Length: 299
Image 1 (cartoon, rainbow, N blue to C red):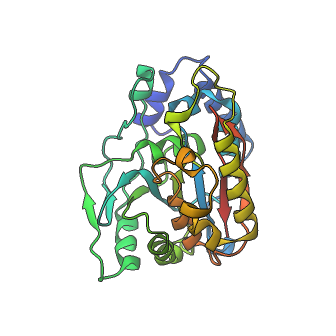
Image 2: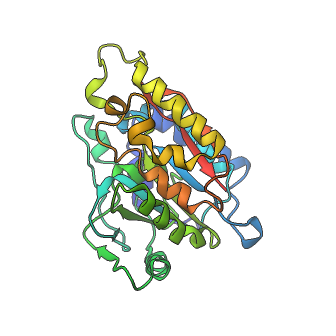
C-alpha cells in the first residue's frame, strides 16, 4: 500500500500544472522513474561542501536554473542530512533552527501568493542537532531556536534540489563576517561531511539589488561581471587569501555587495573543505536579473 502524500506533496499538487515549478517537478519525477537518488554510504567518502547562489522566488520560474540545481544534486550521493549557513540568518552567537518540523520562514515580499503557500516539511533533525553541538564543542554554546524554521536561503534551493523533502535539514546561524572565524567554523563542521552530511553556504555571488536597472533585467552591470570574474579566478586557483581580502581587493564591491552577508557564507564552505586551497569545482555560472549565480563545490 503506497504511503499517503506528504504535506509538501499536497501543497505542490495545488500549483498550476503550467507553472515552471510544476514542470520541474515533472522533470524530477521522470528522472526518479529512471533511477532513484543513491543514498550516501561511507564508501562514497566525505560529502562535498557547497556554496549556492540561492535566488528568490523567481528561481521557481527559471527552468534552466532549476535543472542546473537539481542535476547538480543528482550528481551527488543523497545526503543523510543537510546543514545550511544562510545569508538570511545573522546572529552574534551560534544558533540552530528547530530540529523538530516547524513553519518555514517566508522572508521575502511582493511576490505571487503561491510562494507563501509552499511547504518544505523535512524530517526531525534531532540527531543532526546533537552532532553539530558535538563538533562545535563545549567552548561555544549552540542555542536551538525552537520557533524558527528554514528561511528561503535554505528551503528555496533545497526544494528545487531535493523536492521530496525527505532529508533532515538544519540551519546554523551566520555569527560573524570575519573571514578567519568563518573559515574556522567551517573547519569545525568538516567532520560532518564524513558522516554523509551536506554542508552548504547559501548566499549570492553578487547581490547589489539597489543598483540593478529593473527595467532591463537582461543587462549585466559591469560591477557584477567584474566581481564574478575576480571571484572565479581566485576560486580556480584556491587563493583563499585573495578571497579573504575581498574588502580591499574585489572590484565593484560597494555595488556587488553593499552588505556582505550574501558573500561571506562562502568562507564556511571553504573552511569545511578537506583543503580550502584546492581549486573548487564550479557547478553553476551565469547571471539572473544581472546578479552572478556562480555556485561551486569543494572536496
